[in-house]
Image 1: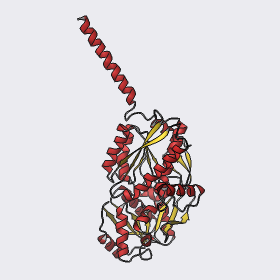
Image 2 (image 1 turned 60 degrees about the vertical axis):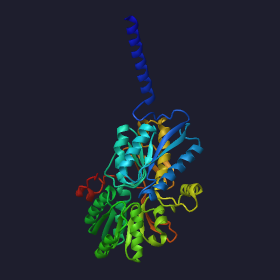
Image 3 (image 1 turned 45 degrees about the vertical axis):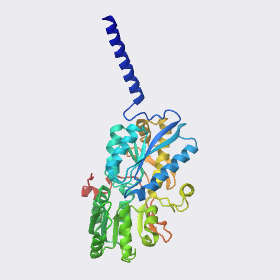
Image 4 (image 1 turned 60 degrees about the horizontal axis):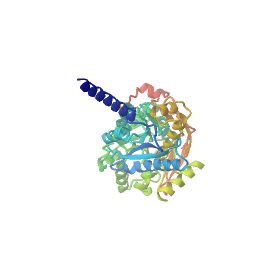
Length: 413
């Protein structure tokens, strides 16, 4: 009996020791982010296939460039960055699955990723549940906050609102709103409709296309019938290619139907063709032609890494900035743990001398102060700045705009 009791006692001790070892190894849910050993893992999560791949590849490439630069300069907190890559495949549900894999199975300390707001919104509850951190590099519709996301692209008052104001100042009065059928275009157009009504202008049409839609004949017919002064374009991915090529097939140019696009940058111009897009306008915070010394270095490094024919873009630059801002936050925190890095972000002291100019994360809302730059596509496929503002503080809920408050604009899911 004594021997039996002793065996049971030893078995319990053994099980307890095993459990303690497993807890120590696992740490918080999703594995340790402490960067044990000589490396620290980060996740890259973009669409390498599907309708959004034409836009997201350059963002991924910019992140890899930043990682390689940082590693060559000695790394972060004495460790080299190791990146683990997953393909969101242009599907929000896939983004969610792959984000969980990166955190829970791969044990990454942070994720750089997403393009569409649908993909971001799919990943948001994952990073919140695991206490992880997503760096999101693309302009978006606002109306969202999360302690587990840093938004390095433009808030609506740093892209959409000033672009509409610029067009109104240039005398455009009749607007046709065209977008992909998901949260960013629909929320953007909700904002634009309220802005136009307050300024005495008119939306003469509003149409949406599926993300993988290739036939725009019916929409083009509606544009022809509406006779707008300008088309506000929030199409994304391959939809932009199909729409502009079909407009070109009807011999329409910017002289016939001017467009202001919010998701066409240099990478999309290269795919669609400068001969088709020349003269059309876009609104961003950065262009390859932005005249700063840091940008000259960035463009040279990007072309040296990926080829002289490759172009930089606003989302790519914002993704590049995100990696360096994460580095600065890790160094301030002296840690790779997301909880510690978030505290450093929220100090309001994390800055980077970026290609677009010095950017600083606002600690209270995880967004960057950024200048607005309106651009026009040139014959060479580059985008030339035609209007710029001083740096603008982000206002994701448009709470400082009376017309937006009066309209009661609400977030869409």
